Amino acid sequence: MSIEDCTIIELPKISDERGNLVYLEQDKDFQFSIKRNYLIYGVKEGESRGYHAHKELEQLMICLAGEVTIDLYDGVNKKTFILNSPNKALYVCPMIWRVLRNFGRESCLSVLASERFNPEDYIRNIDEFKELARIYTNKAK
Ligand code: TYD
Image 1 (tube, helix red, strand yellow):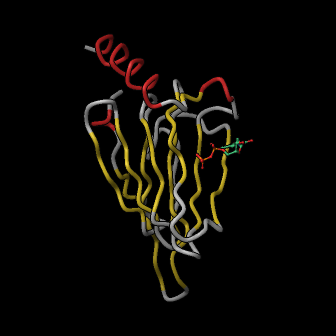
Image 2 (cartoon, rainbow, N blue to C red):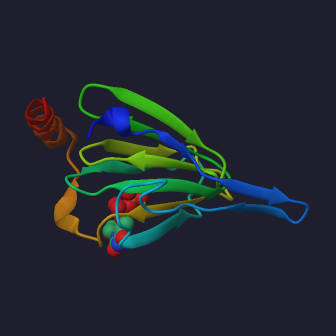
Image 3 (cartoon, rainbow, N blue to C red):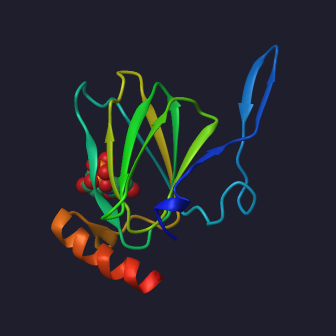
């Protein structure tokens, strides 16, 4: 898995005169088992979050309301995504540094995660991340 795999998945949307319905299905729209869901909302203007990577965790990020900008970094390459619709899910693979920014007042980000919360899975120091990412990328070659 690499930053190349971190892409927006367009979720199936069913719209009629009553409104919209969006769904996502494991093994079809995404390939891991969901063990946890958390929401980030009420983020103060100008505030940014994240600034960490995960050693093993896989995630799907869906902006349920408003918008959010997500910067991804694998130690070499960078990608930026704007999530602004509930039918867009951003897949984030392991060993990706992420920054979440540009939240609107009403923004609500839902994160579906492959594991339960585990502080040991976090890399919160950017220099440590760059070093581990270099080893990880070389192993993947
Ligand atoms: P953190 O992952 O640092 O948030 P962000 O990436 O948005 O900056 O988490 C913030 C706090 O919440 C931290 O103390 C850990 C805790 N937390 C949980 O207890 N369970 C969870 O599922 C998550 C994601 C965080």
